[in-house]
Length: 119
Image (cartoon, rainbow, N blue to C red; front, side, top):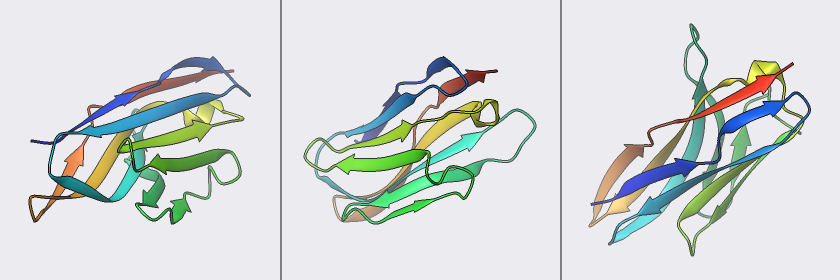
């Protein structure tokens, strides 16, 4: 069994920084891609950033230049460094992972972590 555990959310003032983590735990798996999504109240879920196990990244236009996604393959952990945070970044952030587990492609989602940016 493989699971994702997120951490690092919280309350921060505009202009501040937070770092989110998403750790995949279990056995007999390898990571293909991992992504961060977010969903604000009354809005659709949107992709924030994604990364492959080889380090290829993609970002939503709204976070380019402010957020940095990275992956530590040895720890099976993905990070999202969020700088220059804005109130518009307030949302629940979810980790998604596309894994190869015992030869089967599995897509997992984390439980979500709240990020609140005050003005």
